[in-house]
Amino acid sequence: MTVDNRYTIGAFAVIVDEGDRVLLSHRRDLDLWNLPGGQVEVGELPNVTVAREVKEETGLDVEMVRLVGVYGRTDGKADIVFTFQCRVVGGALTVTDEADRHEWFSVDDLPVNTTPKHVARIRDALLGASEPFFRVLTEPSGREWLETLRSTGKH
Image (cartoon, rainbow, N blue to C red):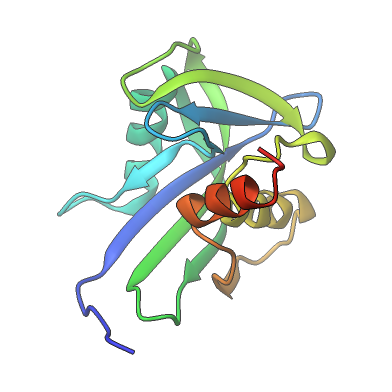
């Protein structure tokens, strides 16, 4: 296995409304639903990134409620992802260059084309643990998941 020692650091938000529904964004570049978030920029802390990325992708202003978990990989991909539970404090949902739709979903009614690693992080967030999770990502990437759905005729 070849390892790329350059790390990619990401920060994503699990935003839950008063009806315990989770906000997902539909990507413009792939037919996938995912949590709002993205890559940490140089000199930026992940909690700052998550607020910036949510604003850029959804139009919403959020504040961090808690760190849900830190997620990594052991398959040769050097990704570290911070997932935060956030609450909306302002703004309004709007389509953007990155997302063409936003919808609130019950955790039991997530679209089949939701990125599996995001589903795992949503479930972790909804457990309400007092301490953050530290987990190895084992779920397929979004692109791998779309290929699986296509090959099985589920999408």
